[in-house]
Image (cartoon, rainbow, N blue to C red):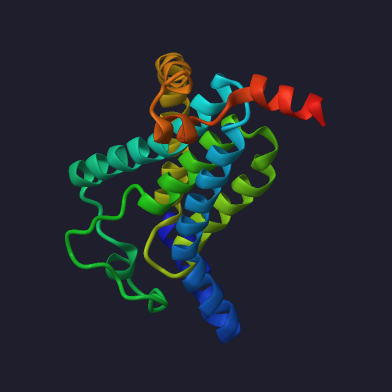
Length: 208
């Protein structure tokens, strides 16, 4: 059933105009860069907020990295062949089929996207309206270009979500404590990195 859905999606991709195909081909990699930009924005925003907000902003890229590592471990254990080689009668993938040994399950891109979307939403509540559609679009794009089965990307989204929740749950308290100590540091780069925090920001705002 999953192979048939893969065929349907890749056939649909080949029926799309060339500019749509090109856009999705770019998006499947560009989305990772945009999540990186959002990590930086979340960190900058959290510098003038309380230490819990700052800790969550720091944990977002860490949770995403942890999810990626878990995905890589699962790939090496499961060894599922890519559909662009394994599914008979399927349309040619829009991008080059990954080399043999670069396994399919779960999708690294979908795992990263799922983890980043959830971790960023925990650090910056309203950002989910951007990150969730981004993650879903990235997951779909991996099937659209022909390098993953639908179950690969679905599992990646779930894995990324679960790992992000675990890392944030476990890491918030120690990272918050670290942030509190860093904000009182006499080392200028450290103090700049952590920012003045919510109290200083509130005093500056009151003076205006």
